[in-house]
Amino acid sequence: MADTIYPRLIGARLRSQMSYRASFALDLLTQVLAQWIELIVILVLFGHVSALGGFAKNEVLLMYAFAGIAFGIADLFAGQLDNLPTYIRTGTFDVLLMRPLGTLPQIMVSDVRLRRVGRIVGAIAVMVYALAHSSIGWTPAKVALTILTPLAGAVIFGAIWVVTCSVCFWIVEGREFANAFTYGSNAFTSYPVNVYSAPLRWVMAFIVPGAFVAYYPSLALLGKQDPLGLPGWVGWTSPLVAVLAAVVAGFVWRFAVRHYRGTGS
Amino acid sequence: MIEVRELRREFKVATSKGLRRNYKTVTAVDGVTFDVAAGEAVGYVGPNGAGKSTTIKMLTGILVPTSGHIRVGDVDPSKQRRDLAKRIGVVFGQRSQLWWDLPLQDSFDLLRSIYRVSAEDYRRRLDECVELLGLREFLTTPVRQLSLGQRMRGEITAALLHAPELLVLDEPTIGLDLESKERLREFLADINTRRGTTLLLTTHDLDDIERLCPRLMVIDHGRVLADGPLEELRAEVTPDRELVIDLREPGPAPDVPGVTAVRSEANGLRHHLTFRRAETTAAQLITQVVRQVEVHDLAVVEPEIDDVIRKLYQRQLDQDVRR
Image (cartoon, rainbow over all chains, first blue to last red; front, side, top):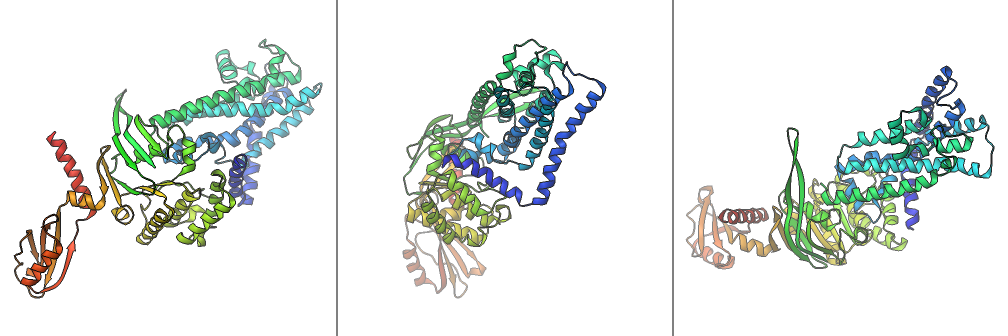
């Protein structure tokens, strides 16, 4: 029964949102459009140049789409962490601590907003378009990579969210700081990593493992060389990086909650 | 059920002076020791900032003590938070554990899954609460539309669905109207006596204590000032009682041995006679009084529980000054 509680908690959230169908449909559409506004930026850019960091339009669109799907999925579950300062201030977090469940999963299912699915739908459409207009030599492994990449990316984004939001346990209004990384890394991962200057690139690509969300898997799919010189197999390691990121995030969260219960308010 | 020894909890509080940030240590709970046996009902009272909530947070596993020992039903709350959660129920008057925009019934269903209550037990316990607390007419109402009194009844039901051995209530009657308060007290007294659920409640409303808790613990500045039956504390701290007599005709107060002070009002129609609890009984006094004057009505007045607690604080202050 423990395995069914989280789906049930999510189901309860969704039910309360579906009670206003008209506004829900509108919200969903707005989210699809929001995702496509960033697309316009890329398209305008390619109106002036034919390649960005050595990548053609459809290749950049693929990265953008992977990043968009991954971010959309992560936002669906980890986006609730933006409420953490409120939860701490109002004592809701204490209520979570009094239940026989982990605090992190409880927060993740606390406010799943189905309309955010709109972003994912919008990004999937772009991915399908980009894949159809790229010359990829499809193999079963590449099909698997295409499916796994957004999922691994979602886990990586989720881990970034958890780690940076943990700051709120020390600085209650640490949300701005956290958002710089979460939303910032979404923008970062939508473009080829080599277009950024070196210091930013190193931090955002490897310390925050943003380059593994879309950039390296796209290289592997497209069969392209990394302009930065990393070997081709790196593009296949995103799921591994995702697991690693999740483990690190789990430890950071535990450490942060321990701090909260030790210092508390 | 609860075992607390030399419990301490400190907080570091930031004091900003210009650009420098200093930390000062504040001791919220300072060496608290007590036991609560299974089936007891204990009132935990004290002024704001006395350390009540901090104690409750440590008992429920939310906060980790700075030092000291706690066991709640053989569980160490800070180390086995989830095991503890299955065995205790907690109601905070000022925060909700219900789902704000869902019907009350849905919150109960979710809690049933969270605490893994069997369908049969759930049905039985919920029916009982619905019956005794009168929840039926608003079970399908979203929680955000409930009145405070209705919500509190929902909160208490939510805390009882997994049949906890201990129910901790932090200000359960705060903000409620008299009727809702009375209904809650009646219900809590019932589950305490009939089900044997141990109760620990903090409150500012001393009627809660009078009605529910045979035992009272008073805390201030993080220390327990007094712990015992309400009657004993009353006798110890306020040794005086008062006999109020209304005469048929205005007249001087009767002169009765054992009376330590007299206050008259209404031109001698009413007299307040103060006497020592330990030295004279009300019956002795009344016998003497009716021999001397013609009495229209009389009443024995016990000191208010507020007075008892105020005197306890005062006593502590005096001791601190003397030190």
